[in-house]
Image (cartoon, rainbow, N blue to C red; front, side, top):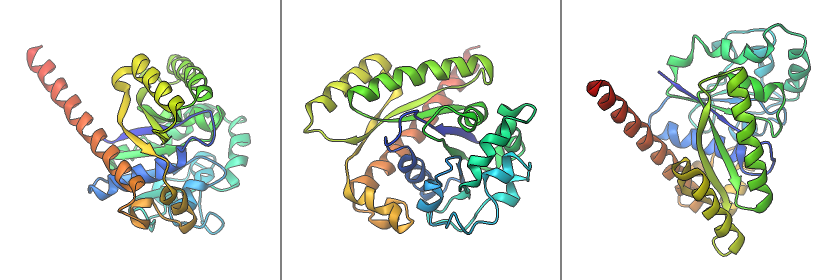
Length: 267
């Protein structure tokens, strides 16, 4: 069965879309079947996947509002080797329209229900705010991956996000949990980065990925070429970091399965 992961942080500029696109490309490179759903009206994940958001025939709007089947909405020819549900300014209208609809927070969950087994991983790029689009993502997801910079305000924002996830779990998705916390734009020369990183590990333990995404100019340049960094410059530290993250996630998944099998056999 596929796994649905919402990539979310209520704070903007933390590497959320960068993580979604590059992690998806890294997973696809390991021969996993991957889908990216762009729910951010800015359409950055769409453009970063080599798809012109102004030229797409269908977008997340059609999936959420018109209930168009997923296989009619997806873009197959992405630069990252994964399938994509595109976003553009139409998705802003979708947020408004959702407010008028019955069971509005479950639209994405219902849309993915019959397609979850078609993919190994489905990554949802959320808007940098808690709105109806983000709530749809959280309702559909198995877990939330939180990219964050190691700075003081980000730590405060993370506390608020964890609280939000707990509240949403109580209301729309009882199984929702934190997949992991990813340190992004990391500069080891910065004392504050090290201090915040230590606090993260202290409070969240194994939820904090060992992999750290460094500040990297190639990572910043790649979206303007409509490409994940591993296809823009595979030797860059950014490309290596996201491949390492994919490897770490896959190992965690295997360990979790082994523990589940052992628990079942003991029971």
